[in-house]
Amino acid sequence: MSLAERTREAVRANPFLFEALRAGVCNYTAAARYLDLGADDEEAVVAALRRYAADLPDYDPAGRKARVSMESGLARADTDEGTDPLLAVGDTAFAAGGGSFTGLLVNGTVDATVLRHVLGGLAAEDITVEAAGATEDAAVVVVSRRDGADAVRVVERALETVSGE
Image (cartoon, rainbow, N blue to C red; front, side, top):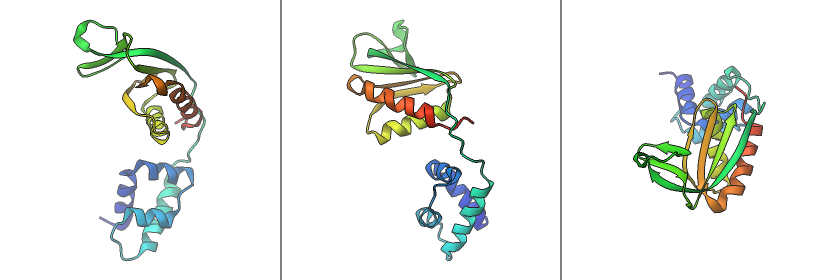
């Protein structure tokens, strides 16, 4: 495998670096060091990164059209209890029931890309996510009740800045 192929593979294994290359905000030398491909010539990795970046589609933060709503008082529930959950994954569901969680429901132009940006934003704000899921037109993120209002702001910011691909 060539150095260029190894570089592209390493970038794809690091989605944050892939997005930075697309957005044109990457320090190529620092990225080459981070990737640590074992190449004798760091400048060759830098050149491979530049060529790869030039081939990527531009990052277009066009935003998404979606509405965010918040439902407080969610509790964990079993999916076989006959509940009407806001989110269910495997045998665990989150449904209304006086619990200590808040669900953020996003409806509109939503997909896994939006969810990825939302989760990244929540992590950057040190907000713990209990559960999350997305479909082609909706996403749900469950956080603690006390983090609900801050999480709404993060979700709204993610919707404004996520690429409209």
